[in-house]
Length: 422
Image 1 (cartoon, rainbow, N blue to C red):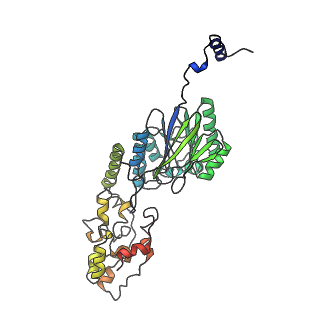
Image 2 (image 1 turned 60 degrees about the vertical axis):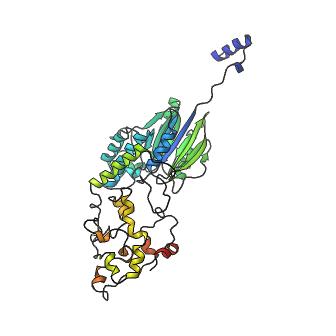
Image 3 (image 1 turned 30 degrees about the vertical axis):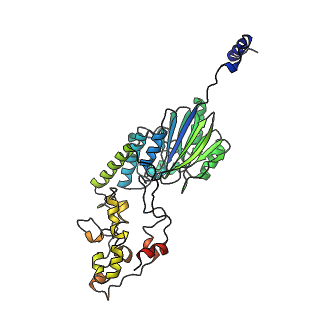
């Protein structure tokens, strides 16, 4: 049998008395992989618990700190996750942030497809073609990249809800397993390592990894914080950044395998990335300039009186309220530029969802901050005639609309009531 070039060269070296040990061995190429995403519109950390976790500005810091020629940055959708003009602005801002951070691939999610063809086309352009999916047919009118390549990796994105995604974008759908098979086949043909950004949950990721063992990494969506360890199906790693952009996963690829899994919490110890912060301020400016607060849908409701009117008869209770953090709730948004953000202001004023509620400091100064009527309900009728205008009794349910687990983890009514009881 004919000997290979390498075998013949080794025989020559042996004849000369030169062993292979005389030549230094090349170290295996090591890549850093940074996985973020499932932002779902949480561009900045939100809540009254301290310290707050998350935000794209901290995420950008982690990504930039890891950046090198051998860094792969992956982002899982959804970017915005909601509907309406503010979600459109969020999606476009996220696209610009992905381009600024140097993300190598951003997976399109079915939730974002609700924003429509026009917005998704804008997101694709602003991301500089980083937005990708295999869930739409090859002849898709959007023309999104089906895969993205960097170094030894071929990255594709697919959704378990491909039919729903396609219907929202007036396009044809590719079933999940067919989309993944396309990724695997292309990776094999090009000699690349296939990575999947999956718009789906852990069970979906398991089934996909079992059906396609060639996959090296599957990134999936999960509620809460990311797992402490990756899930392994054969040689395939399944990892999730958790929800609402609160964490980033860092791992390494070396000598044909993954290692070094590390979840990174985006806490207050991380400084904001300057470029990401500038883009976020532009987003806030757009929310303010388009006056989205005034455009918020409102329902008809009874008239409010304002906390000062309550204080005339309920002096002791009014003093307790005036000395509480509730009385300065709107000022906390002023400090961060969120005072014009309808998603934030609702829990910092009285009756933003009612046509009789807070409009602005200039028009309704008595309804600024979390006032008496935030819990007790509209009180104008009671002020006019205390005997006829009865106020509803309040309890833990009065706090529930704003003190939700996402924004106020660990909230306990009995403990917190001690601070404001009256």
